[in-house]
Amino acid sequence: MQELKITMLGASGVGKTTLLTAMYEQFESNIGKTNLQLTPDDESAAILQDRLIELKSLLDVFEARGRMGIQGTEAMAGPESLRSFSFGLGRKGEVPSLNLRFYDYPGGYHATQAAKEEKEFVKTILRESTAVLIPIDAPSLMEKSGKFHEKINRPQQIKALFNAAYQDLDSPRLVIFAPVKCEKYLQNNKTAKELLEKVKQGYAPLVDHFNSPSLNPWVANVITPVQTVGSVIFSRMEVDSVNNPHFYFRKTRHDARYSPIDSEQPLRYLLRFLLKVHLESRQWSFFNFLRDWFELDTHLKKAVDEFARGCKTNGSFAVVKGEKWLNI
Image (tube, rainbow, N blue to C red; front, top):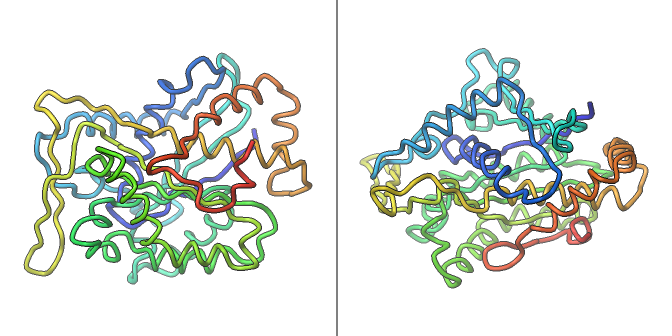
């Protein structure tokens, strides 16, 4: 089975695993009448189920430590012990024909104190990944005029990783900015547009880098906010004596249930990207498998097309650059 690698790129505590959990949980309820099926392997299913239970049992008011109040990713024995999340993608009731492998590494791997092998691991995964998903801690970006954006989201560090990994590209890549914990900022069109502009401003140096002559032909860039819990909103921020922010959230109602919104959008964009790359019919070794995958199964191609056409492009959603890799 052919495999695609996707990197979840973000600092510790931003919400990488929470986003992945919401993406998988909402896929089934958003595929409609299409003939697609996403099947996690046994280990991935068990981990995500545990995460889902934690998300559904959040207190009425809680502090977002790690990922929305749950424990972050760890790799006690170094990169080789790191778990990845594997999903088989194919037609319902049939053996999957493509594997999507999401790498959710500890955010500390690109911190200043990270070991050399940990930093090299992240660069290698970036180079080998078809797509990169960057969860963004929305309160850090939006509150206090973005005072803690650099400290929490680490945009300059992320740009440095791309500087090292994206060299001499000769085939397309997709980079998705996904603001999370953003329920407060999607209450109306005005605040939604403010969130969109803040993301563009907060990652302007990285987007400018993607616009450089050597990368501009190859990199597609989108913004897709994800309400990973849906039933909570940011409540307040407190700063401790050493200038560390603490973000607190509350449920919209005491009996509010876990109800993520738009969590399938990153996956819709990924499949839209793959379909467009296939339609280009170029001889890129990085994507050779797509020709066989789609051409041998026209029903699968139709199902992917139907699902991918549900990508949102208004309000706080936007294609920042690389429209040619997403227009189908």
